[in-house]
Image (cartoon, rainbow, N blue to C red; front, side):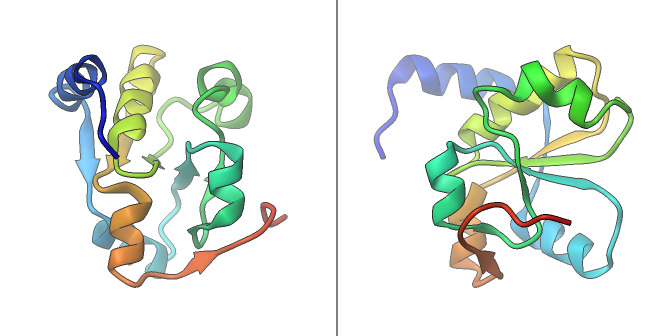
Length: 128
């Protein structure tokens, strides 16, 4: 996908202020059953098509509106991802501005997850 220059400039600026991690980091943490919130911020239809196994959906369009109800502790460990790591970088920046202190964006997003051959889920969100 070709992104517009203004969008890329915003992402570049956000990436200078946020923390990032790799898909391998996340996969390892899931394997060790470390407690953290693994959040897919993509659009609803993207999430239903496929998602990283174990991820929860809070779409980018409602993230800032709903995050405090869904994750009230602003010190909780949160990893966000999107399609390629751009929207999640912007989302991580927003959560930081809201006072969340332990937020990371998964660099490469679901694309990196798929390329690594990590487990995927499909369909509507699973219920725990």
